[in-house]
Each structure stands twice: as C-alpha cells, then as structure tokens.
Amino acid sequence: MTSLVEIRVLEGPNLYFPRAAIKLTLDIAALSAAPDATAARFARRIGLRNARPGSAHSGFRQRFALRAVGRLVRAIAVESGTSRLAVRVRPSSDPERIVVAYPWAHRERAQEMGRAVAAVLDALPDADSTVDLEEAVSAAARQVAASPAGAPPHTIVPRIPVVAVTGTNGKTTTSRMVAHIGRTWGKLVGWSNTDGIYIDGELVEAGDYSGPSGAGRILAHEQVELAVTETARGGILLKGIGLTRNDVSVVTNVSADHLGLHGIDTLDQLAEVKGVVPRITRRSGWAVLNGDDPRVLAMRHEIKARPWVFSRDPDSPAIREVLSVRGRATTVIDGWVCVLTASSDPDPLVELVEVPMTLAGLSRFNVENTLAAASAALAVGVPRDVVVEGLRTFRPDAEHNPGRMNFFSVGEVSVVIDLAHNEAGLEALFEIMNGVRAPGSRLLLGLGVVGDRTDELIEKLGEIAARDSDVVAIGHKEKYFRGRTAAELEDLMRGGAERVGVTGVPAYPTEVACLSALVGQALPGDVVGLMCHAEREEVYAWIAEQGGTPDSAGTLAAKVRAAALPSS
Image (tube, rainbow, N blue to C red; front, side, top):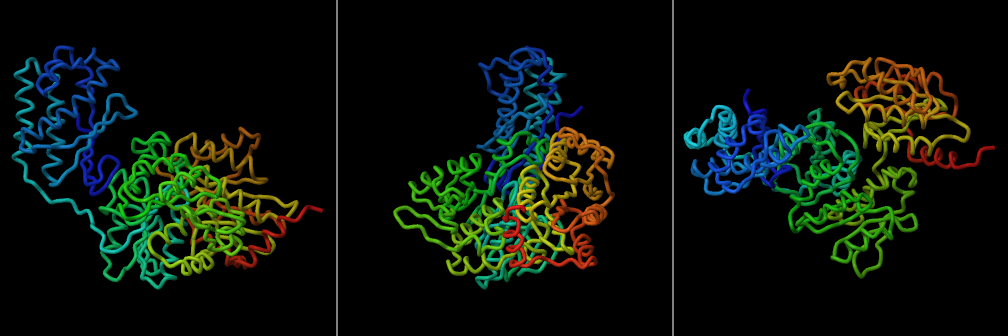
C-alpha cells in the first residue's frame, strides 16, 4: 500500500500559507509500525540525531512521525537543489494519517516532491540498514531534481478593490448587501457567491462560485470596478483562495456547520479556516470582524490590516478594545446604526426601522449583516450617503436576496423562504417567523437537510424544528442527498423530533410538495417557513400560482406591528 493518500494543489492563500501550496495527505502506518532500530536509523538519515522515536504505535511514535516527515521533506528539498523550504505538518483525526504542506513555485516539481516523500515512507518496511535509507532519500532527491519544473501558480493580483466575505451564516446576504451598495454608488460590481456569478446585478453563470474560480471570473472581467467575493470553507480547503490579497475582509461568525468534512472537526479548526480571509487583507485595508463572536474577534491578533468590529452592543468590550488601537466599530445606539471612532462622537447613519432587511430590528442576524455590510462598504470607500441609501433600498425579497428570508403572503397566510441550513440558521428563521406571527396563530415548518452533514447535526435540526414549531413536515432535497437515502435522512430527522416528544412527522419528496401540504393546512394568521435549497425557483413559481405576492416593506412592517399586539 502506498503512503500517498492525496496530493492537492492549492493555487493561492490557504490554511497553511499565505501563498500557493501543496497539501499532502500521507499514511504513516509504515513509520508508525517500524521497529525501533529502523525508526532510529531513519531519524539519523534525515538529521534528527538525538530523536527518541518511541515504541511502535505509541503516542510518542506518532509525535515523532510528525517531526520526522517534516524533516524528510526539507532533506529531499535541499538534496534536490532547493535551499530553503517552509513546511507545515499536522495530525488528522486518523492517528495514522498526517497532512504536510509546503509552498510551491513550479507545479510539476512540487507535486513530484510529494510523490518522492511517499516513496521514502514506502521503502521503510524493507530498509534493513542505514545504507538502504540513505539510498531511498537520495533516490527521492534525484527524482525531484529530474522532474520538469511545470507552470507557476495562477494566483490573481487584483487590479480593482476587493471585498471578501466569509463566515458560517450571513455571508451571502452580507455580500449581496455590499454589492447592492456598490451599485448604488454607480460602480459596475461583480460578485460571486453560492448562487453564481453576477455582473452588474445580472446572473451570468449559475452554480456554487464561492471558491477561487468565482473570484477569478469576476476579476477577469475588464469592466468590473468593484469585486465582492463570498469565500466559503470548501474553496479555501480544496483549492486555496484565488487572490493574493483583498482590500476589505468580513467575517460574519463561526458556528457548527460542515464539521467532519475535509479534516475540520471542531469549531476552533473551522475558525482557523475562516481566518485565512482576514489574514490576507492588505495592511492599508480593513478587517471587519464580528465582535460578538469570540472566535472571530480573536482573528484581530493575526491580521496585518486595521480592525473594524461590529456588535449589536455599543458597550461591548470588543468595541472598547478596538477603538483603543485606532480601529473602528459599527453598532446600534437608540435604534440607529452608528459608526464609532476613537475620540469622536458616534456617527448615526440610519435608523434600523428604515433598513428593510432588519424587519424593524426584529431579525438579530440581519441586524448583524447590516452592521457588517455598512462597515465593509465604508471601509472600501463608498461615500456615507450612498451607504445609507443602499441600506434603505436593499429588501428581503427574491430580487435582492433570493432564498434568504424571503416573505410572501398567500391569502392570509405568511410564507417565509430561507436556506436555514444549520442550527444557527434555523433558529434565526424561527426568530423572524415568530416576529410576524399574529397573536394566537401557529408556526408550520418545512424541514429539510443536506446529506453531507453529520448525523448529530441532522438530528439536532429535527429537534429544533419539532421543538419550535406547531406543525413540522419533511421536504426532501434529492439533489443534495450526497450519498444518503431519503429513508436515512428521515430516520435522523424524526429521531431528533422524538427527543422533544414529536412523532409521526410526515415526509414529502420535494420542497414544493412540502410547502403545498403546509400551506394547505395553514389557517389565517399562521406562518409557514420552508428550509429551501434545491427548488427555489420552483417554490417561487408555486407561490405565484396560488396568487401569492412578495411582501413589500410596508406589508412586512404591518405584520411586525400586528404580531407585537397583545392577544385578546
């Protein structure tokens, strides 16, 4: 069995380096199982003369393996003609697999280095002497030296201002708000997100473009004057960021989502991935950070850029700390979105009631998205009055923010369409559903999940859905089963619902069928929410067929006021 599990070429800044890198996933079973004498000989050959490898399969051997493989990479690099090479080595959730990363300047030779390292590890079981190991390392170095150099990285150096948005929840809404403000400024804006590539508000290519290819397409467009890029976890891990730097970065939050994928198992690890975006923000730029999320706030210690925090709490310690180092902050004071700078009075931009996305301040998450977008727009140089106008004219509808907090009226029933793909997103959906529910009316939820989430997360979504709604039904997303079956997903969601005493949750094959069933049993004043991902356009069409209409800002405000009235 070969030691090389995977070679991945990262084209730009990544989790390991601020430039293009090679990521190797290596199986170290041979080194972990090697006799003590073989491990000691290996250590001496690569220059670790005083190393203590520990006994086979021990924790000490595993630690030795991390150090030894990093030294092996450097030894092969030096013997093949590279004088200096930075190397990062990390364990994985599998004790017999490790990750090794190093920067690259020439694609083919860098990949050959990975294959050469694996070849030395493969030779360990048959190495009976120091001479054998000497020859294995020397042969690996010759292999690398003889390899063609290959092409350089294609990392793009931006020629226009770039606002890069990342986070677990809110990044699509925030990036759309920034793009809208940029267009209000009169700029031709290109932005990429999980829905596709947009040029001046027009969708030019549908698909998930939250990785480097989306940013590349935008920056290749000669007329684009401002780029807004949504930067997702997957793109950073699998391809690297396609740009050398950004001018303004935004980190909305870090919460449980996509854990258990690509070696990211904890929130701290996920935060480290998201932190790549502010780390490559240029020194003269701004890193806009959520001051209410401790993992995001901690990123201020790793950035070159100036810090700009946002928080719903004007007395937040995060704001005090950032202002003390000449940073900036955006917060809410007496119902106004305000910008704070050191030794200055607050600058009130706009009242929350005038920002449609916040539902008169009802939606906590969209208040945060508003603060983040206002900060980013000001940071990239948009004039103050344009930012205010942009915030006032961006609406939670299918035109401005498709699939995120879209409100409709179908007769006397309110319908809310939202992605709500994780715990925080679902709780935010319930927050706004409650905010427009007429006194004494019910909440009905169409629950759906994506198959590549962990069992625990899928069960938790089922639990939250059953706990916080009066009626819950499952609407499947077959396009996103990702290796699961409908029966598996139903079992997990129903299992979560049963934790809070809800049984017999019905399931429908599509999101449209689920919505139809829920609206069909809804009473006047009820609110139907749908976790919609797979059939958004079909859902919009179904609502229109039923005579449903998008809620205007005035209609939404009236619903919020009515919901606040005491029940009779």
